[in-house]
Length: 390
Length: 152
Image (cartoon, rainbow over all chains, first blue to last red; front, side, top):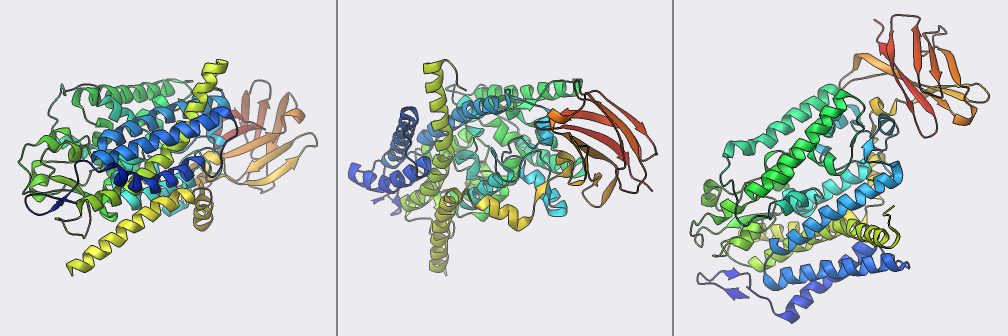
């Protein structure tokens, strides 16, 4: 283990190959179990997709351990997850329903896949009426409500708001767009905007409780653009579609490119706001060593979710909205930022803390991405060989 | 004290690892257990509520759901009732049916449904029946919703 000038243990800049291999072995085993789900496919296309996914994921994890960089490799997998999710989801919708559009008949038959974003809006109706305000299915079918609740609960307990950078299958899109330009064209955003997600959360929770309809999904979700949207049969559904498109283009494409930040996640997403609270109920956090910090403010400038401020640096920690992506840790030339396990010493075992975080975080990311990456790969092979994904 | 906090921190971190692992290992069983333990269901505003009566017409059946007035706390003044007709193969070109939705042996409305086009019409026999919402062609049946006003 390396020690710096202050005597504190630090993360080794580069781990030796044998040690990296040894530390990667458990993840190789776990990712194999996760992505194969205990079945080795016999069909050539699926076997190839499984093997390619396994190798791809484990190369990224190996490089994370070998180089000490987290976000550099996480972001590749995170973007892959989102792109493959969109391919897999849309092709599945077209196969099952014949279209990306949701009809009112689909609502009545509970055929709308559930995602994690409407979860906080459903907590009050679920507690008071034992019902979920969403036209999906509780168990069974594609993306059932109970399965999303289980995933959300498990990931929230394990990673807190790390969910937004290691699980959310939408987040990779804006993360990807935010990396297109080398330098941001819009450099400063008023800090007041960071309160907007809490306002959106409050408004949506109240509106869902009052109207007993999934207001966010019907009116505000930017990701309807790349998943599914109401069939345009009226002026109302036309307006809804225009809103979805505008929010997607504005918050997921244009603003992330211009600001190099995750603007949907940091300035709008109500689940993100709710998820910030779960950062208090999990063991991992990102801390800042004030003695090492030279106040260059690079972490403040590059944090995708506006979670680092001058005040938080002075306090030696990132803000409550930190998604534990590791971008600030990778960027800090002084190695002043580090993953930390709550309750433990701040000056020792930094590499151990990082490893303790990386294992559950990478399991979450590979388990989420495994299914979609393989499915998208199989669909793409099908498209190339037969001319149709379906 | 610091040692104890550190020890508990490590235990917590290991626990997080096992939670993450268990979440995916138990992905097939946990949702069913959660649903069974909480008794949670999809809001009747989407499902139409439980079927309370079925009228057998021989070639086809009419399913009458319970009136849905469900609110967040208590019931609302305005609601709806859903009717389903199935199977498609047995349905006549036009269904014309008088419905007693609350089971008080008094017909509340007359509904007609053109099973070729989905066009509907409604004749209300009392003031609790407001208007026709619309009809829906589902996978196995035709459905229609009639808007209701709660009786005082």
